[in-house]
Image (cartoon, rainbow, N blue to C red; front, side, top):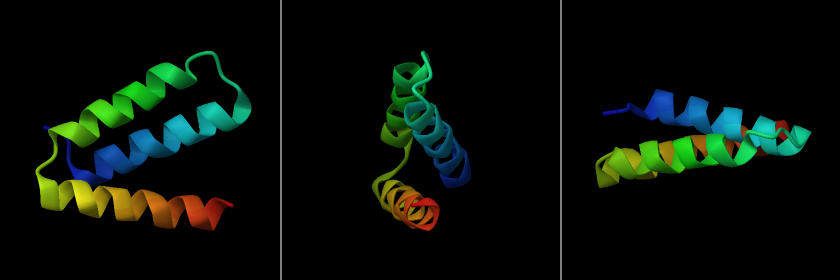
Amino acid sequence: MACVADVAKLAEEAQKAAASGAADAAKKQKAYTDALAELPPASRATAKAAVCRCSAAVA
């Protein structure tokens, strides 16, 4: 099972791939959503919040 930090890293990789138009962007997004789905509900909420904070910092 993935931990929150692992899921946040996958999200960051997916966002960077999408922003650059990388061919594997969809694959990276799927890896993120699959890992997120494996987390318990409370950890999933924490991961989503971490990703939102990271996304806001980048934007």
